[in-house]
Length: 144
Image (cartoon, rainbow, N blue to C red):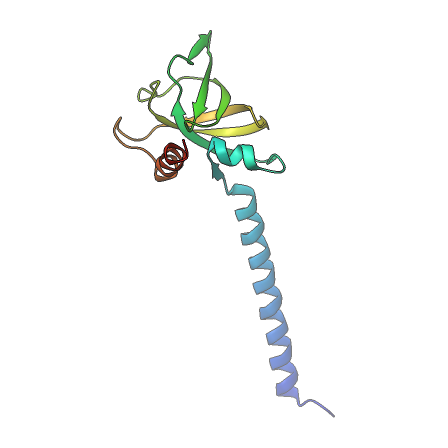
């Protein structure tokens, strides 16, 4: 006999623990992959080789004079002062959503110039700007 009875029990226990840990890891990993939402600036969208198919966030400044309303649908332009993306949103705009101020929208990118937003994130006062948006704007001001 190669293995003793206690060795066989320990080996079975090890395989069961390994199997359970692998299954738990798989479910955690696949759930994270489905629920992760990446942030992009208009410049980063322009530089993408392929359009993402899942939900993403796009942030920048709402271009002055670009906000238009048609019934319950709003359209506007998000810019990083170098590149622009046309955004269409159906729903109610947050009170803090103003032209010339920063905004982060979440939705689906149809192409590199057109974005359909499912939500607009505005949980800050008018002086706050998300760090990603501020860095993108700062970088593009320096490149002018």
